Amino acid sequence: MAAPDQSLPDIKLDTTALYREDVYTDRRAGTIRVMTPVTVDGAVDAARPVLYAGQTQLMTPGGVLPLMFEIEAESLSQAIERFPEAVKQALEEAIEEAREMRREAASRIVVPDAGAAAGPLGAPAGGGRIKFP
Image (cartoon, rainbow, N blue to C red; front, side):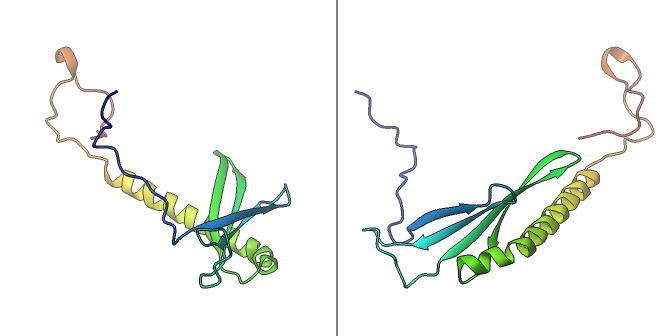
């Protein structure tokens, strides 16, 4: 039998950060995940807060856009009430992130010098003037 690969990471669960996950959905608008902190024996850990996370999908001209986001809430009913605003905030953040990625991509465009080298096999370089790195 071969020895285990020493380069593989040692993956262990953090027993002080365990959560039980409950999923609630209306099967139409989205899903709310309730993350209840638990101890290693499965008992509720009242020393840590319950966490709420939302998920939904929006149809865009480019296809389906999945959104996942945290919801600041003290109860499931409050998370349900705050779900629409959390979706709007997550969408605004996704749009801003896409804009930033577009700006970064645009700043990578390089315009060649006037005396650019010939293309393959001595042919003139491609018809465009914009060169991508």
